[in-house]
Structure formats: structure tokens, C-alpha cells
Image (cartoon, rainbow, N blue to C red; front, side, top):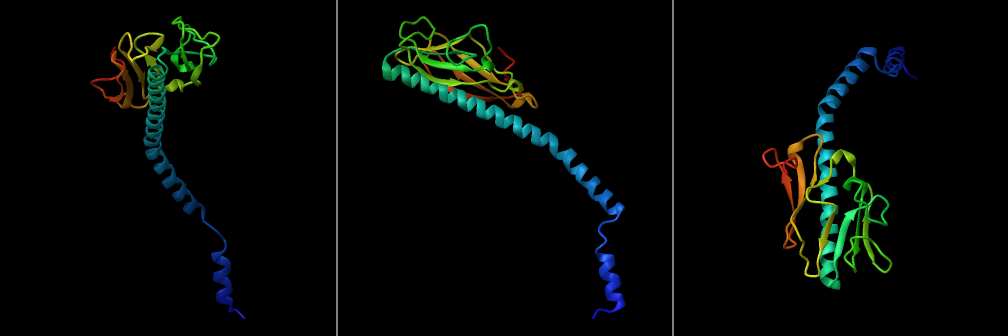
Length: 184
């Protein structure tokens, strides 16, 4: 049997938290969240930039390899419906990669669609600083240099660019404040 003192302490201990204790815990939690949120948002933006640029790099390498392998031109173009090129849309709406047998820059009957990609996060401010198409010839080369940019909305100095040279070299680079994607 428990004494009166033991029953008193047991019932007092099971009453829960006081209002002051709850306010202190909530205040500390709010301070931690306030400091952590901007860093977390930047990490998320960096991850979106890295993932989107890696996906495009993979697609461009696939385009180059397919052109060399088949001996036919491949085209990467803007596409809003993943079935036809659309020069009146933006690269954010998606892209389409296909073998262009007759060099008309449009998907025709008998031309193989190799890969499609849907909408890119609009917060990336995704741009291509050359034109509406990337065309690899049968030797894996292009007609002109190009640069795709993925801008980090939270820290522009952590933006990335995918750079394509006429020789067919494809690379990515982090764009800092002295060499950012806003430069053309």
C-alpha cells in the first residue's frame, strides 16, 4: 500500500506540463524553425537545379550518342505535348528528342521519338541561349554553340549551366555571381 505522500507525488507528476513550460518549448521551436527554413529552402532549390540540369545532360548525351550510332540527325526541341516540336512555347514546358530523318525539325511518320520530358519547375527560370532546337548531326556535332541555364531562385550564384559546343562537347558548370546565367 502506498503512503499519502507517494500518492500525492504520483498524482502531481501525472498532471502534465504547465503553461509556462509549453510556451518555453514553443518559443524555442519557433526560433529553431525560423533559422532553419531559409537554409532548407536553399538546399531544396539547389537540389532542383542539380536534378534538372542532370536530366538535361543525360538527354543531350543520349541525343549525341543516338546520332552517332544511327548515322542520322537527332533533334532536341521544345514541346508542350511530348509529340511535336513547338517553337511558340518555352523550354519549361518540356522537351522532345527524336531522330530527324528528313532534317525538317518536326516529328514525321517513321521518325523515332527517343525521349520526352515534361514540365520543368518554373522557379528554375530555365532558358536556352541559342534557339529553339539542338541538332546533332551523324558525327555528334552541332551547327552552333549553346547554353541552357537553370537559375536558383534563392541564391542566383548557385545556378547551373549546361554548355554545348559545336564539336559536341557537353558539360555542366556552376554559375557564380561573376559568371551567372543572366549573362548572355
